[in-house]
Length: 253
Length: 316
Ligand SMILES: Nc1ncnc2c1ncn2[C@@H]1O[C@H](COP(=O)(O)OP(=O)(O)OP(=O)(O)O)[C@@H](O)[C@H]1O
Ligand SMILES: [Mg+2]
Image (cartoon, rainbow over all chains, first blue to last red; front, side, top):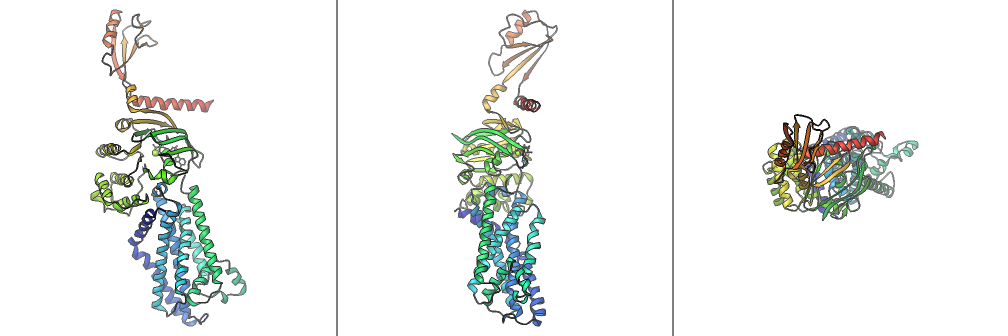
């Protein structure tokens, strides 16, 4: 392994983030705060507890997931899209680095940033709601694998996107609805049976359910199934990235 | 020993356009090779294939014995590229950009080397400036600094003189000489014969994806040393006068022009001899002209011949 190259890419990407630190943090923190004020306090006070958890606390895992998924995908995709767009990707392609090293550097940085934002949102949540995390270690692990797998997914989008519209398409058009319909703001068991079945085809349901389990010890879907699903997703993404670099698809003419 | 070996390389782009047609080329360790050709000849395509920026359609390329496709890491570790286009992260500082290049090659940070490189390219004062705030010439130097940051064995300079003023160009050629002294092998592309003449040890002429000629510059220059003396006659001659038959002399169809080829670098050009023979033969001269064949002409004639060949092929 060329650790020096991994470190170089990773730090270069992280520095880019630090340059726009305020923007990077402000927007997710502000959005989440608004959600807490509107859903947690204003509406939540009229909603009963779900599975013995106050509504304000219940929505925390979903809100964190919403921001983390967006961040992981956006960071993962822009990290490689911009070098492609301005042409500096020539350097990565002509450098003596393996696909694994490229992934570790770029995806590692994107995942780190998403993870940090997840933690910041969690910290913000403590300002609004009282809650207790049942399985903190699992919470951290679940958050980490989510960040990594979606940063990988974003990385693929960044390579395949031909323009800015395509770059934003997936996060805006796919992730937001999936997260909203994925049980961020309600428990799946609150839906009519038919919609419960439909929901099971939404991958984000598994993520949020898994994450919520680490907070409150209860889940809509078996945690083992959720973890297995996300790991399969991660492996598929890695496989696709390897294929892309092996064939040069959308990278080399 | 050959550092770079290109064997039967072809490159067709996705749209089916064939940019390289079975190119063979060997570049010796430590030499400067100028790749000379008009726009669209395939110079950049050749470089991109070697550096791993494009997929090779067929053929092989080895660098220091390593196949660029099968052993890309070993091959690429030796190569450095200054692309034709300037491509820099606009918001990064000069020095970060250069450090990035070194790190990507897996080399430990070496601030002394980075400083030396930036100073050599007169960029040290600009090290904390963002790339977007640099002039075009400075940006090109940053591109060069990036390429030198990891001390390559084989350096590609794709049209290094584009957009560069005279002073900077001269300095660049000095840099190329210095690098050669340090043992770096350099391949540079250019549209201009004078440039090839100025810096290269060998010249390869490429057109339409074919290498038309690879020759030592010295040999090429010797060919260029050929001069022609054109003698216009007052009255048409029917034939070359006897006694001059063994000289390199030719008579035009209308009999009004004698052309004499000679080597201007020789001590005895034979001109005095020729002129006295002409006067003995009673020929009256109207005018004299001399004419040097230049690399330009060789180049143009090669390129045209190539075009004619292609046209013949196309029409047959
Ligand atoms: N990505 C591409 N897709 C299709 N054709 C291409 C592509 N890149 C280059 N070509 C074609 O290949 C040919 C050779 O291009 P190349 O860039 O290698 O020329 P060059 O010798 O570097 O020219 P110049 O002196 O203008 O830089 C040109 O006809 C060009 O149009
Ligand atoms: Mg070119």
